[in-house]
Image 1 (spheres, helix red, strand yellow):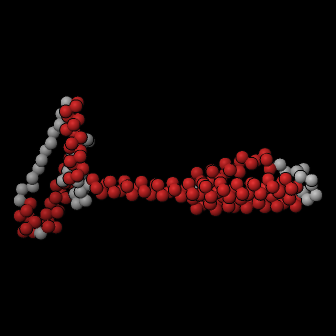
Image 2 (tube, one colour):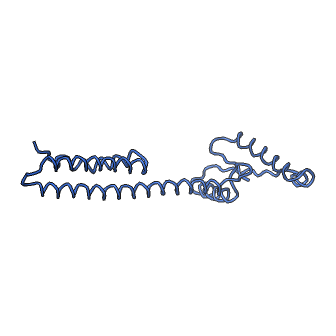
Length: 178
C-alpha cells in the first residue's frame, strides 16, 4: 500500500512548534533536525519502494516541499526562540538595574531617588484620597564623629545596623529610606 504523506502534513509543523515551546532553542533545534532527517529517511524509503509508479514525480515534488518547508519552519522557530531568550535576558537585566537604581546598596533601604519618587506619589495620594500619611525623619547623632574617629567602615556598620533594625521593625506597606 502506498504511504500518503498528505495525511500528516499539518502535524509536521506542529511537532516543530511543540519542540520550540517545550525545549530550549538549542535542544529544540537538534530535535527538529533529527525529526526532519527521520522524515527524509522515510521519504527516501518511500521513493525507493514506489519505483515505477506513475505518480512518483508528484510524490518527489511533495516530499521536496515538505523538506523545504521544514527547514523554513525550523529556521523561523529558532529565530523566534532566540529572540525570546534575548528578550528574557534583557528583562532580567532591566529588573536588576531597577533594583540597583532603587536600593541603597549599603543598607538595603530605598535609595534617595526611589524615596523622592515614592514620597511624591504618597503625597499625591494623600491629597486625592485624604488618606493618612506619616513621615519620620531620623538623624544619627554624632555619625560624623564616628566616621572621623573610628573610620568610615565603622560608620557604615552603624548605618547598616540601624537600617536593618528599621527594616525588620516597620509594618507591611511602610518603607525605610536612606
